[in-house]
Image (cartoon, rainbow, N blue to C red; front, side, top):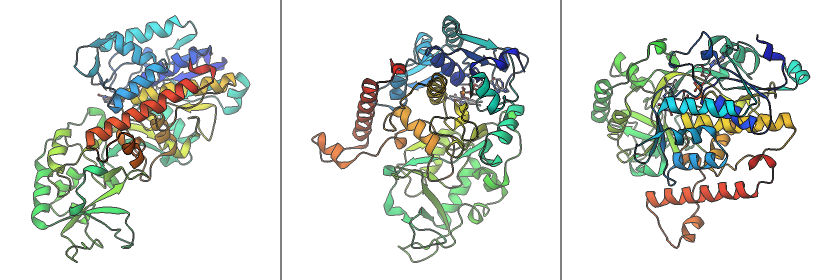
Length: 464
Ligand SMILES: Cc1cc2nc3c(=O)[nH]c(=O)nc-3n(C[C@H](O)[C@H](O)[C@H](O)COP(=O)(O)OP(=O)(O)OC[C@H]3O[C@@H](n4cnc5c(N)ncnc54)[C@H](O)[C@@H]3O)c2cc1C
């Protein structure tokens, strides 16, 4: 415990992307901030290499800047909301076509300089292993933000598990993510809705496979290229969510007795149970996205596209998210958080960044931005009006606090999180039908309008 633990103000644990952004946002509201980063001291994570704030751990790209793309729109919205990370990324920009790629050292140095210039952020070189009690926080006039990322240090991980969750299982150590597909890109002629246990229900979209196609699929999975495991990821997999390649290695029939089990899935076209069946599950209430049940995998992304597009019905599949399996601490946020990103168990502690269940540099920063504003608003007894779910940043906030129909797993910003286009939206453009690219462009135009309306009309002092 350091001396700063007793001081009033906002205490932020983790000086990564989300923590740095949260500190900047709160400092701009005049709140004293204490920013704890263990890499400043003796400890690091298995992925970070420097002691600098806002270090990018892998790629140096913040993805597209095009306003007719979801990542581009998210950056536009964050820029309007005075994001220090986006401003620093623009300063550190290096040529990369339509992507915002950066010199990572310039990015980190710029963020450090900007935070220091606020004059109200104190950096503390320490690993935080536990927090004061809620009563102590109230007495001292404190709020806390946890922004410790996917590689949260173990003592704090244990503290969160014991003190802040609804159930201890609400904190995951690994993510085992199945691919998510755009609903409109599926060929429904080759699929059918059925639920194994209640045949009258249409909970799953099933893809029947005959023996020949199944055998080819197993061979493709066995011979595809896979991403190597990092040394820190060598922990054995959970038996309950094995990657498909691990199951396929155990024998050609393993998947047919696991996630590709055809039992109870009579194909209405043939009246027969198929040799095997792949199940897709709706990922959101609008049914604009489907996830491939049990398809968590470390197959390289281009390989996933190649292998999965061979599956009947998925020939033209558009992947919103590819499958993955990696070390990633994240919480079941919709179960544990209030709407303002504070914990239900202690509303003086807020959650930010990748650990809240988003995925990616910009997304993690976006939740840091909101957490910084919301925590500052609580300390200042002020209001911060959240962006609407129809904007990109609002859709991420909505995802983190409300979740989806299926199991909650880290999500990047994508079209599937934005509201579905209504027929009336299309008619207003003077067209009767629209191709996918035009529909996506229109979704971006509408999301931008919603954000701008929010930004212009919000009366609270925090916004400008
Ligand atoms: C190996 C790996 C590669 C990734 N590659 C990409 C990529 O290429 N592109 C992409 O968009 N996303 C990538 N991600 C996902 C994610 O966007 C990044 O991890 C991003 O940095 C998350 O931001 P954050 O602020 O939530 O966490 P981080 O940036 O990780 O920041 C968390 C900070 O908290 C500190 N910390 C942890 N525990 C404590 C503690 N107890 N006390 C004090 N400090 C603590 C850490 O040292 C760290 O500085 C990757 C993730 C990993 C793990």
